[in-house]
Length: 128
Image 1: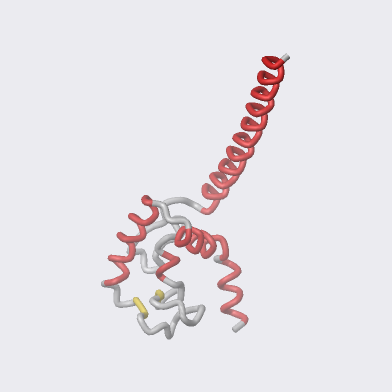
Image 2: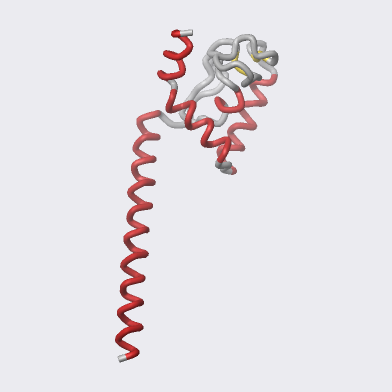
């Protein structure tokens, strides 16, 4: 049991990425997930019954790593442990992108506030 938790903790970013991408659907991610799942579907290491799943009830999963395929194929920063498909982005690059997204969102918020202030100032000056 302890080994399972260590494995989950070690891969927490990739697991979260897969879960997030399965909830917030993106056309590109879904295209990649389809291609990856097609490969997994013909792989002898695919576990339909869930006997090798790290988290029970998340089958189908990979016999090698125990990951739920539903989430694993949607995590762009992860690769097939049997080398049938590669990661598309490193975890470090993904962190950089996440920081850029956050900075961009904050910048947009600030720009909206400034625009609202300018519009209010213009409306006030037109009334006077």
